[in-house]
Amino acid sequence: MIRPILFALLAIAPAKAAELAPPEREIPLYEGVAPGSESWNWSERTVTSPSGMPIVQNVVHPLLQYYPAPKDKAVGTAMIVAPGGGFRNLMMSYEGVDIAKRLNDIGIDAFVLKYRLTHTDPNAQPQQQPPRASQSARDLAEADGRQAVRIVRQHASEFGFRPDRIGMIGFSAGGAVTLAAVNGPAETRPNFAAPIYAAGAGTVPAPEGAPPLFIAVAADDQSVGYQGSIDLFLIWRKANIPVELHVFQTGRHGFSKKGGGADHFMDRLEEWLRVNGWLTRVS
View (tube, rainbow, N blue to C red):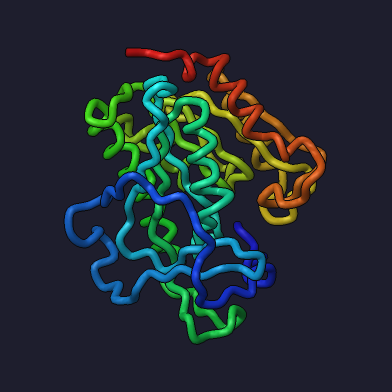
């Protein structure tokens, strides 16, 4: 379960979001209305935190934002990036576009996933928010994650990467979306995945043909804790599937507490991607 820590921390209000690098294009996950949310009549909105973090709420029309790697760096690998935010927000900077741009730097094409969310009433105080569509929204968010893999794989040749070199990285709630894709049908399953301080990590079984995992969490995570990530690691080890785990001494949820190894988790991910051949250039 994801504790509602974000509301107390953010005190969010409608505002102009901090500037983010624009995607090359946006790709809807579905033609027309997304199945399961036909009655959703509210509008998506962007807000900012007091520290200027851009946050998206009330996603009704899920989509992928495409950030291609420079042509001279591209290695033929793609990754879907699923931001976190408790299935009510999407943290579009440090768990979204910032990650996409870092992946671009190492030659990976990136797709930031805007998945469906629980409705947030802009006129209500955070503690007054009703649990409207909460579970159904999570189910639909996980369906969006699987659909994202399907779409990216179907269009791999168009974008210039291999359909068998598609990964997914997800943070917190986005980690749950990532693990739902890992446990989905083969056609919607990434070839490798990185659940980062993922919600519900320890409850995920290893399906037949499960992909390699890179797992990272902080020992002082005050929201989802670290045990689920350890349990996930042990499940994959028992199934003899390649897996790597980093439990950083400090970092807290979101790796928001700076000064420890969690500051450099993307360096560790890059090393893991290189060891497993995902950064080896293919034609």
